[in-house]
Length: 526
Image (cartoon, rainbow, N blue to C red; front, side, top):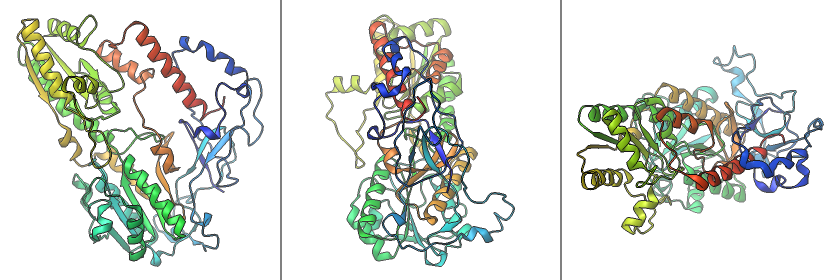
């Protein structure tokens, strides 16, 4: 029996009652007054464990607000698949960590049951188990990296290799070169602790990467042909969806192959988990670009500095970099529409700051303002090999718009400086914080695969690492919540306008109130 972790995010809707039903109890009566609500932060902060009764998801039994939930009531378990789900006679073995010098002084080596039963959504706690389902000398593992670059990929690779070897005595580890396509081309590299010893000091990915190229049947054929029985897949949304398909095919064929995903995105837009690796490094490195822009515009008359940061659909890097910098006057993210002309528009704000300070620094995420560029350029929707929409350069577009407005309309001379540090940020090694985080992710994935779990991904949920069904991290994207305190802190820090007025502001905020409350009600007690 093992412990579980409560999640702040929603479960699949078919598992839970609709918030509008009477089964929600007396609190459901407050929903008509949602427009007056402005503090929807109801995230669960209960970290206590609960015993698992089965591997199946259990439905929430909602209680009214004046009732106390009965024992074992009011929670839902979202578990991950296990090899014994379709290989019922699979033998287990004592965990080699029992003989490990590293864990010899640890009082509680293995994840065990906790006594309390908190309500809410729970995931299985990550960590070593007493029993494993692979003999160390029979393991042939492989590691593959897919998608775009991100600080920390090499650290994850290194720690998977070292974790398998040092903790479990696994010596047969392959690196699949060039992303999913590497399975077809049979480009492999033998990985040992010595081979990967210093790769964490480099940016990029030691195994090289690619986008697309996912043919599930061919990949699983190759896994079978090579005798691979543990697959570690490092990648973003599209990559993890591919990992889920690989697991399904493995299950269909009845193979003893554990498939573990390590979610990767520099944008921090992966659902459920607290934070994605590489994000802290990206925010830290973005400070260099912001500082350079500030120095440039402070040194000239009417200087306007524009820094474009990553953030296709989510503006977290721009938001956190702005808060960390203190030199930014305005932050534009995809989640918050803005307009240029007229009262309360961006041009008016820039003009006011130039008159007040003599310079202005604007940070924007790459996905901000795409609708305006598309309208002007009559752009045709295109997608890359991963299925991501191709974005136009909002930084260059905004730079030209501001320059034209002030020189032609306002008859005002300005000095614009545009900085795009995207590839500089993506290509650097991870910092100390991300290195530690990557180690935890890698070791959690290794413990899970050795324990026979499959079709799972790993990550921190409410600050504790958990095994999460891959479908949960790919069903939606994490975005900046405009009704959250963090966005309010940014507006207070920069003193910028919201660029939304009147009914538009109220409608947008009211809608997000409802969305956030629905989101959290599905994960916590009513």
